[in-house]
Image 1 (cartoon, rainbow, N blue to C red):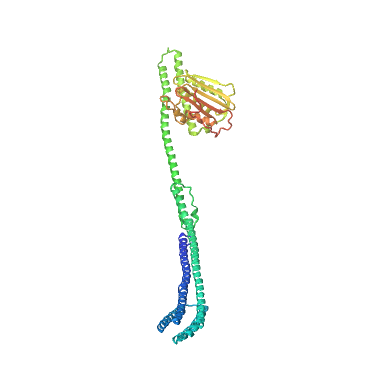
Image 2: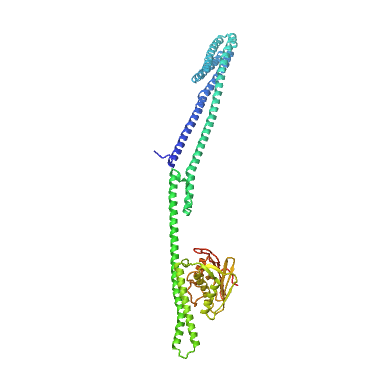
Length: 533
C-alpha cells in the first residue's frame, strides 16, 4: 500500500484529481453543448421547415384564389384553359407543401388546426370545381354569384384556419428560438462557472505544491548553502515530516552533526597542536635559558674564586715582614669574595627551592620590622661593595608588617643586587619605605643603564634578561623570584625605567594581609606603569 505521506503519492493524487477534473469538465461541457445542439436541431428541423411549408401554403392558396378570379373573368375558352392549367399547377404545389408540413412533427393543437384547414380547403376546392363548370357552360352570372358568396366564404374559412396555424407555428418557433438563446447563455454561464472552479482548483493545487514541495525544498537548499558555508547553527524543522523532504532534512541533520563533530575535532587537534607547539617552544626556550644560566652561573662563581685564588697565592708568597695592614686588606678581599660566593650559593639554592617546589611551600608568616630588614640588606651590600653608596630613607611611621622574613629578605636583596649590578659606572642607589594607610610602599631606585621598553613585558619571566645587559653576569631569575614573593604577599610591583637614566622598582605590600596562602595579586610590570622622572 503506498504511503499517503510521501510526495509521490500526493502528487499522484493531485494529477488524478486533475484528470478527473478534465473528464468532469469535458463531460459537463459536452452535455451543455448537446442540449444546445438539441434545441438548435429543433429549430432547424422543425420550426424552420414548418415556417417554410406554411409560407408556401399561404402563397400558393392566395395565388389559387387569384387564379380562380382570373378563370371567372377569362374572355374565351383558350384563356379559361390557361387559367385552369395554372390552377392545376397550384394544386400540385399546395399538395407538395402539405406533404412537407405533414412530415414534420407537431403537437395536437397544430394537427387539429391543420386537419380543419384541409377540410375547409377541400370544401373550397369542390366549390371552385362547380364554379369552373358553370363558367364553361357560359353561365357567368351564376358563377360570379358563387365566387362572391359561397366560394369566398369557404376560402376565407380555410385562410383563417391557415393563418391561426401559421401564428401557432410562429409563436412556437419564437419560443424555440428563445430556448436556443437561453440554452446558449446557460451553457456559456455554466461552462464559465466550471472553468472558474477548475481554475480555482488548479490555483489551489499550485499553492499546495508550492507550500508543500517547492517552498520546503528551497528552504532546505538555503539551509544546505549555509551549512556548506560552515554555519553549523542552522536548524532543519522539516526533519519531523514523514515524506521525502523529511528524509532529506534528516540526512542534512546527520551531515550537520558530522560537520559539527568534525569542526570540534579539528578545533581540538588545532588546540592540541598549538599547545604542543607552545610547550615545545617553551622547552626550547627553557633549554636555551638554562644553558645561558649555567654559563652565567659559572662566570659568576669563577670571578670571586679567581679573586680568592690570587690573594691567597700572594699571602702564601708573602714574607715575614709583610705589613699587617696589607695582610688584613688581602684577607678582607678574600673574605668579601667568599661572602659573595656564599651569597650567590644561597641565592641559587633559595631560587631553586622556590622555583621547583613553589614559594607557598616555604611561606611562614611572622611579624617583621621592615625598616630593620631593609637596613640589614643595604649594609650587607655595602660590605660586599665598599665603594657603593646606598641611601636609606625610611619614614618615621610604623613599618611593621606580617610576612615571610626569609622570602622578603631574598626579594629585596635581589632588587638591590640588580641595582648594584646594572650601575657599572657607580652612582647612588636609593632605598625608601613609607607607610600609607594599610599599605607599605618600598622603592629601589638606581641611575644605571635602564631597561629597554621592549623588554618590560617579559621583565619578570624566568631566565629572561634584558637585551642591553651583555657582558654583565646574572642568572635571569632574580626578578622572577621578586614577582613570586610579591604575589605571595598579595602585593603589586611596578617598574619605571629609561635607557641610560636608571630604573625604579616600587613594591606595595599590605601591612596586615591576613592569610597569605593562595593569595596571588596581579603584577603590573608594564611599560606605562609609571613615568620615569
